[in-house]
Amino acid sequence: MFKKQVWASLFLATMVLLAACSNNSGNSGNSDSATGNTDKGSNESASSELEPAKLKIVLYGDESQRMKELSKTEFNAIVKKEINAEVEFQFIPWTEYGGGKTDLMLSTGEDFATYTDTNYMVKSVAKGLYADLTPYMGSAAADMKKTVDENSFKAFQIGGKQYAIPVGNKPNSGEFYSALVRQDLLEEVGMSGISSLAELEQFYDKVHAAHPELIGYASTDARRMLMYEYTDKNLYWQNDFLAIDESEDNDQIISWFESDEFKAYAQIMRDWYKKGIIPKYAATNSPQLQSDWNSGKAMFWAGTAARPFEGAATISQAVPTAKLANYFLSKDLPKISRGTYSTAWFVSANAKDPERYVMFFNLLQKNQELYDLFAYGIKDTDYTLDENGRLTRINSDSLIPDWLLMNKNFMRFDNTVSDEFIEQYKAWDDEAIISKGAGFNFDNSPVKNEETKINGVFSEFLAPIASGFLDYDDNFPKALEKLKAAGFETYIAEYQKQFSEWYAAKQ
Image 1 (cartoon, rainbow, N blue to C red):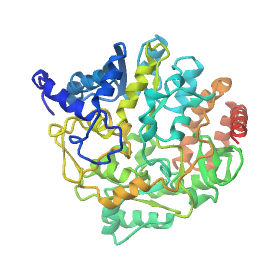
Image 2 (cartoon, one colour):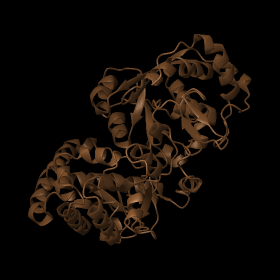
Image 3 (tube, rainbow, N blue to C red):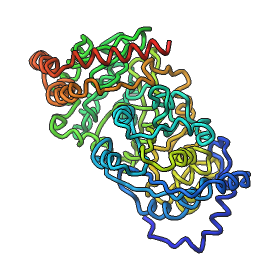
Image 4 (cartoon, one colour):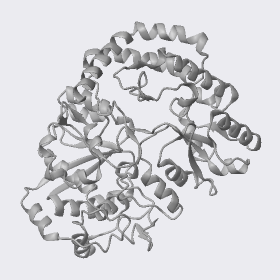
């Protein structure tokens, strides 16, 4: 970790560099960020026409020392230059997301922006806590709209109004539907690939015999990954309780726990738990599963397009020879996508200048040079690039979180990632299908009491069955009785009503 440095003596030189690179809005792929040609005059003119503004960006997790340094120097300097604003980055714990301090900041009228998801957005908009950003979706968001797809913007609209700005542009289709396998272990036991549940379990058996110290599955939810083993439907979950069948051209909401599919799935998970594929400690200490995966002590996990290189970067610190690969247990069905966003920014309703926040969001995904700055820092100080644009980090401190910014138009890879994988990753969504439910946001206000109760039933009675900790036949009747007593039928009727109205309107 770098010690705190004094940047004043380098300020003028840095401004020259930034002025030379800040306005290249084209997608330069993995070109050298120090060589971009720009038209700085027009941007400086636009900035000078704006009144000064102060922005507060709330990020979750731990703030690194390098982030503290850059937020006070280069980050603030470029934001000042580009949009005439002073930006403050405030880090708070992840436990405060979607409640806690975030809710307190909203309810007390603070001026800030931070992440949201669709469920949190709907609840907050109903309370009047988010600013309507629709008026600022023109020039303020012009560059971002070139690099983030339209479906991602629609996902954060309510009644045609934009209440949050999507962040990132990464392949998301088939998210958690593939098995992310330790390829090095697969090859060690003489297997070349996995295409079925039987082969996945064979992989576990062989590796367990060779390495009994390893656990099998590093999670307790495999409903997506195993779906084509227990149903012919192409299920896509709206939440923990409800799903839709993407293969059917209708608006039917499926009650997941009341379905035959859930019973079949619960039996597979029960078998996995009894066999040890899901370790016994998962019933009381599920966070340990993630730790075991990160330290190379697990065989497989649910996959995404990015996880083979994201996960390998972590695991290889403990197991340098580790390799990861995605395998779908059924390859002949389409990959469904919710959109390509990582998350989205909202702006608090009491913000003095919502448009300036949108302009800041735009900077993060405007061009290669600015993306490099916010994601990786200063070239030759925080990272280097080789002749092929491959990244080597000099400073391992995180800045604005990598996962948040991930945009396939700009993101860089290190030399451990093969050209073949990069090509596959960027083409991952080429034949993806947008979910028929993408863009639907449920207003829970008519059934918020029922929702609170059924969430409690889920945690106490249904999740243990779904994870295989408890037997379905012995425990499900009581769980279903509890679910209905909590008002589930009222909840699903309201959900179906809203979804049908929304579905009909978009036809």
